[in-house]
Image (cartoon, rainbow, N blue to C red):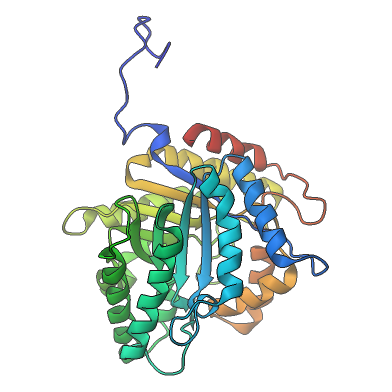
Length: 356
């Protein structure tokens, strides 16, 4: 507070909702996988790199079928990688934000044949949640389920929608009441920021999706026609989502931007990415009372094969997969190869310093 007041008194202390430090920022540890090196070693190095620039929360997403077998039994390779990536954060009193993909965008991601309305499905999810808390209860700040759930729901049959929504409710309830859950762990479901900002077309689904104690949003730099959004439009989209949540009955749920970023490829430029982050952090500063966490996507550009496989899960026209892959692969703040900093890097570093 020193020097904050013009009368040399140091000014008045800010309330926790108004202080820049009220928002946690995380940097996704994305990188281009080198097939000649161990993948888990590279993942840990990327996580440490993100931590070193001030990202004290590690945001991670994993499909449910990558985490667990058909009974919910842990898949050792995936959990070992998560353990290794999260350990440096635990050593620094950092946090982990984890999202479990019951669905992966438009596709199913549960680890067994059959549907979600069975005892097998419920038991498998409970075992997965037990594993999460057993390993990370002390550092888990956010736990979310699904991933861009509205993509799946808008394509699914009414019966499939009902099954998923009921299952999500069960998962959130079980996690919320878990005896190992910390009071500092926020729990919710993950959908697109588009869905929140356009409630007129998705309102019926949103009513059933807004369970838990926060709303988790994932930003897509492409619009419904698979075209790049204007870099500065993030401010309007974020404001519209916050206003939509505030207008709903009951107490407004806080919003987490779990994944948000902008490319430098696929028709975008370095300047567009810089403009996007300037607009994002200006909007975050203005609406920080409604936000709890912002996950910047991401540290480095990724390998084309990884992005092509990921892009196939988004749905939409098959001829748009290559374009989406080009967008997804160029969303890093460091360029592939030499790891050269892109122009937006300094703006993001400044934000991490401000909100730390």
